[in-house]
View 1 (cartoon, rainbow, N blue to C red):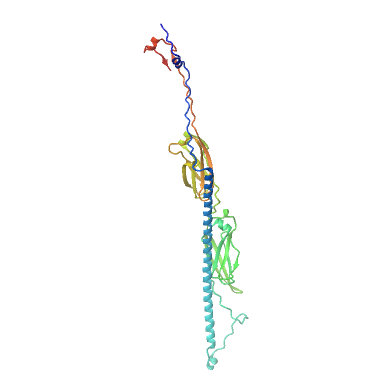
View 2 (cartoon, rainbow, N blue to C red):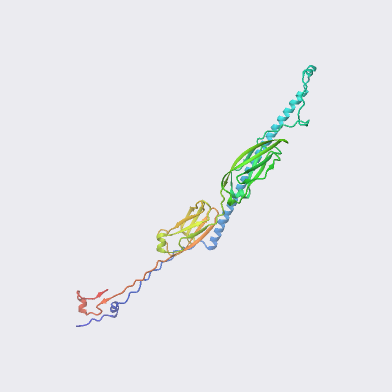
Length: 367
């Protein structure tokens, strides 16, 4: 019987060598090239921020101008009304004085003089000069219907009293607000109410104001008028100081594409808009705007785009739209682990004759 000697290449295939592990194909990075250079990007961010600050400054100046105009208009209206009432009182007084003079000039007959009873002496308290009639108090109040806690703490609340007379005394207070009493120098007077605590400690809500006007008619007599008004104090809003945190800063490709991660943030404008951008460079796979809750907090899921997200570094940028305050956090998507193949090859029998090899019932078994 002849032995079959296998060629070296064939023999090698039947020697039971272990197959080499299958290497995983490298996954190309999907990080997009930046559309702008870093210098251009920084310039654009700076320009946007300056534009936002300019807009906020213009809006603030416009509001202050409007408030000033409203205040001046109210004071002018009150002064006009006071002048009109003062003029009307003067005319009435002049009319009364003229009637008295006409009566004094009317001639009387001797008979009339004989029948006319002697006039009773006037009791002027020892003063021969008649006192002028004092107008009845009819003051009115004008003030803003609402004010923020910040403005109340910084500038106070102006309260204007109209329809006064020179010398009238005015007092105003209410719900933790107070002002020094004053004496009217003309038909109007303005007092500034101030809070007794800092803006962050001022309670929001409607506050009642009590105004008292006193007019002295005689040394022992006085008229008093009480007025009531309300003002709403809006809540204190601290300057936004946003901070964010990611649920994961490193996550495998398969886990991110399946579950994603979460970004949570605090310190945003209360009930304000918050912009979320997620991506690499200027290429974002998630770009959305959400609303912070009443405590200035957010919680937003970051999910993979259609087709999945390739391994690489990515950045989450969160911006408070109202203040333009921005904060960032980065995370990395890693390649999935490759499990080596532990393969083996067994040939039985290792040697065989050509006759047995050609026999279908014999041959060689490879495992």
